[in-house]
Image 1 (spheres, rainbow, N blue to C red):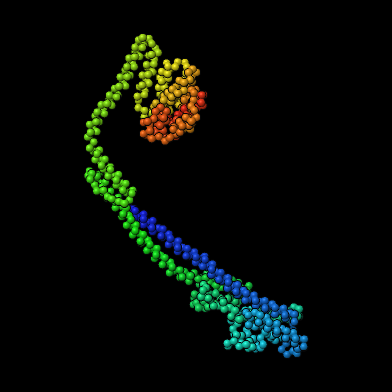
Image 2: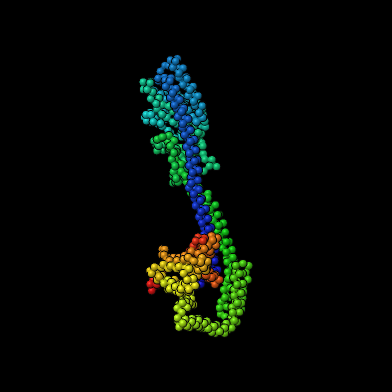
Length: 573
């Protein structure tokens, strides 16, 4: 393998730098896009709404003026013709109509003139003087009479028929017309025309420099034509006019719509410089971070590489390597430990020869240790033979039980046996105790035969029963009782040893169970005795969920429970 810590470190540092910055860049661009898609578009829609409200105010004001004029006509209708002679009362009404139109016209700065056209062709205007023939010749006057009651709008045109006031060459207006039938006046009809000053649409046509440029126009739905367009729409080439997200707002139902175009590309161009600048800055930061990562990785990995070379040198048998220096605490610790290890290896090499010499002597002592138990067994057999020759059955039986007990005890404690063998060995111990206590203590062993093939480590039951005799039954005197039974619980076998000795006080019992529950270490078993030794061996062999637990009622009884796995001999065959 060609992988090294430095290569992997550079790779990981590069990923740690590039990935976050790439995510930041993508997030930045995404946020800009979201701003364009949401905030900026929403802002432009709000501006379009403002324009819509402004236009609605204009047309609503004009509509109110139209309704007021109609109301005046209905009140003071004069069936006037071009050649009719007016009576005095009619002249007064006509004069009132002129004045009323004049007041309405001047009260509304959107209005450039109000004209009432009778079916006879007679025209009454808010202006002092008009050229009626020029007005009546307009195509949209004829269209309005034909359309019936429908509203008619014209595009921007010169009001040449208005000669009362000269504004530049001619007044520039948009006309709003509608024919009304007067049912209370024998079905007579009258056309009301209102000219709207183009200055009223200046906010729509001219776009302030502080505002987002949005191409917009007013569409005459009936004629499928454009009534009015703003300066930005006028300046756009024909092929680009309808690009972008089109938003349509209704100004006059079925008559005039406001069309606006939200162009994201124009907005995006404003952000391009910011996006490019930010991307360049992020790229420079990434490059600088990678250079720093290279320098940092070399600072860290150089002493590690030198340590690696030193270890290879020691592996070849050269115990005088070069030890690198570093400012990092962790690497310094590794180098110091390696140096200490090399020194200890040197010392160990020097002692190997002496240890080899001691090995032969150790083997001799081990053989001698094996001879001593055999001498003890032979001696017990001689004592038993003498007891039999003298006819002393008690001494013979006790000697036999003791001999069997010793033979079992000196076996390897790490070897497994079955529960039946452990019980059989236990009978030898109980037989010796019977010689000692006689009938003072009754013993009951209730172990079903099906459980006696369960595998168990050696020398587990006797230390617990010894404890029952020493701290329980010996102190009681007569009436002592010892019961040993077993039961299966899930995948475990529970062996209970119960005695009716003086019991254990509460504090000692809690302390004992806490000690039994502690996670064992191999070194702790060397210092443990009796019950603790049994508990630690069970935990080391089977796991921390197994071992001893204690229960007791003061002055009544004590019970120790041994928990081992339920594993039979045939399961291991």
